[in-house]
Length: 277
Picture (cartoon, rainbow, N blue to C red):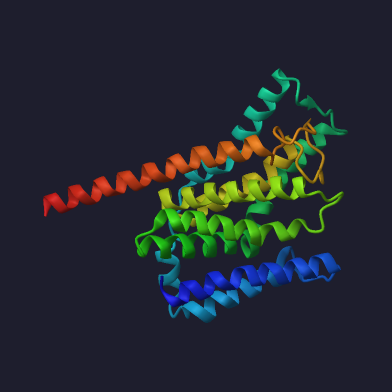
C-alpha cells in the first residue's frame, strides 16, 4: 500500500473520533452558507486528502474518480433502490405482522414535501454527501483497485465510512449498544452498496444518487433505529426497521454479488483484450 493512501486511511478514524467528541459535548461544528452545509468534519477530510495526495490538477483527478461520468437513467435507478428495499421489507413485515401502517398526520403533505424536497437535497448535499462519495469511493476504492485489491478496498472504505458517518447520530436518544450496533451495521451495508455501485459504474454520481435515496426515501417510508422522523410504516422490531438487520443483510448480499460479478466481467474483458493482442 502506498504511504499516501495509508496516511489518508489512518486520518479518518481520528477525524471521526474528534467529531464524535464535539457532538457529544454539544459543540457546533457545522454551519449553513445559504442552503449549503459546511461541516467541520468534511473540511478536515478534504484537508487530509489534499495533504496526503497533493492533487495538482483537479479536473484530471475528477476524471479518474468518476466525476464526469453521468447517466440520468442510472442515477434514477440508483436513487430508487432504497424504495425497493424499504417497500419489500414493509410488505414482508406486514404479512408477518411485524410492521403496521403508521397513519402519519398530514400524510399527503408529507409525501408532497418529500417529492419537492428531493431536488433541493440533490443540489445542496454536494458539500457533504458528494464529497464523502468522492473521497471514500472515488479515492479509496480506486486506489485499492490500482494496488490489485479491489475487494479489500470495498471492505475498508465501507468500514471507515460507517465509523465516519455514524458520529452524526451521536448522542443517540435512549442509547443502547444494540441500537448502536444495528445502526453501525446498516451504515456498513450502505457503504458496501455505494462502493459496489461506484465500482461497477465508474461514476461517483451513481453512489451519490443511492445515498440521497437512503437519506430521503428510507426514513420517510419505514421507521428506523433512532426514530427521529415520522414514517408511513412503523415497527419496533430491529429486524424490520428501515435501517435494521434485514435491510443491512439485503444490501450486503445484493451488492457484494454485484461487486464480484463486476470483478469477474472485467477479468474476462481483460483476458479477451490480451488474446486479441
